[in-house]
Image 1 (cartoon, helix red, strand yellow):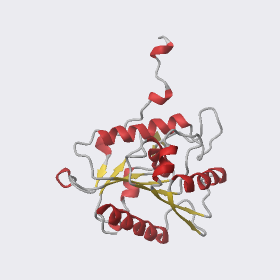
Image 2: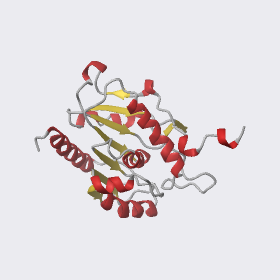
Image 3: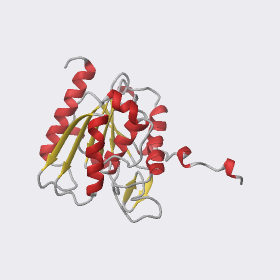
Length: 233
């Protein structure tokens, strides 16, 4: 096969399993409502963060997606580390991030009824996905909740638009997180203030997890966002 027919990395799409999506509402109750996408972490599954549903605001329909790649007992959005490099949870390849986010965008495009707005809530790899989705489609999303995650290393064409929009982003992390490398945290600290309206929260002694204190602040952040979207803030 000639090189002109080969798939380039930027054309690759990691498809979402539509049958694996967990919804908080039936199809008849999803119309004319905002959507909150739930994106789990590495080696986990769509049911993990969906367990937060009873605590979250009732305005949005929740959709918990299953990541496309098999990873141990669960699933992953992208491999840990760039191809041929040492394992590094905070340094995925730009191509892998793009392919995963493109799959989510394709899934959104295929919804029979488009939501009034789309928000993002992701943990760890899912948090990295939330920021990557903002970068790939800045005008598509209303806000992001990024928990114990990071931003990708490479510059992205959507960054300039994000710097204009300054979408609300909640970033929560613990001081005792053993998973996300320090350089990924520092990279995210440097990037987010210039590309979002940032709410940053750091939880003393919290590991790679979500604490009750953090959950309370996530709920407050979401309530503010949905009040703004409804014009009642």
